[in-house]
Length: 211
Length: 168
Image (cartoon, rainbow over all chains, first blue to last red; front, side, top):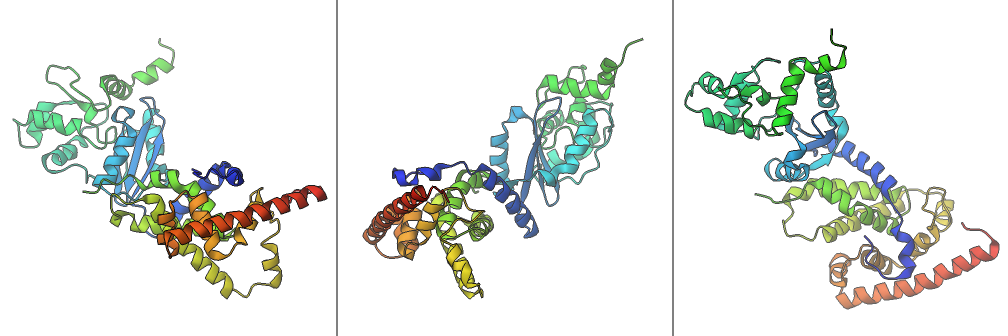
């Protein structure tokens, strides 16, 4: 960003991208070593669109669909966790690998440290309950409410699912309405349907010849 | 609650300008080291920065101090005599328009800083004066004098290069 109109400095507007990219990587390493990297993030491509992944020292803190607007999600992390946020893909290699395995139908459980700091109170209780719903299984919002000891809190369970900071990993897509309808989903209903389909093994079916 | 933007955005937006300012006052690898130290220090202090602060002026102020530290360290270093001579000539690692950078780095300190912070970084003279000390008018004069010298030397070196048929 050269504001000078002096032609003497015309050569300064050269593209510095390769150098700044290298210096950025060095900054990430130095920040990590000095424990100044409060939030590391990256994006990954998936069958349900580009996912934003963010992690703190404690573990994965946020998974976000494109629908949620990744810039806005990062801004919220800056305000609610820390503004010391850097694009640091390697810090999220393990998460990216497990997600890739999941979307290929090769992984049923995520083994990752999770940071639930973006969920509080009852919502956090609900998330803890959701983690116990097995791959390929579903429960109703009413069941989850009963399991948390608050059978009348069906709407609150719905809200907890809608504000789940860790979709896919914490499987709110496995919660359906009592009438069998999908209910809502933070990543859109077609995404919820796609995840349930994947877990029912229907992705694999479409790839192999039917008898 | 802080409304600060993620630091990644700060690096993306201001990284290239800070790099140019570091190059204007230091040779590589010191210029890149100063960039790294500037952004690491900025990352450390960022949560406590006022939300309304001028980010660019803040970063240039940090870079200014890092550059002074680097020059002091350089002076303490028992450098071989040849190293000083090399500052003005082409270094294989320098950007291609090295004549300009070399001419810039040969200016008296205040002029060099005023030119770098006003013409390269785009700060207003009042902001430049806050960083380097002295009045706004003094900062304006220093930048003006620096530009005059720079224009003369840069043109001379270009003429010399073209007469010799070299572009180093």
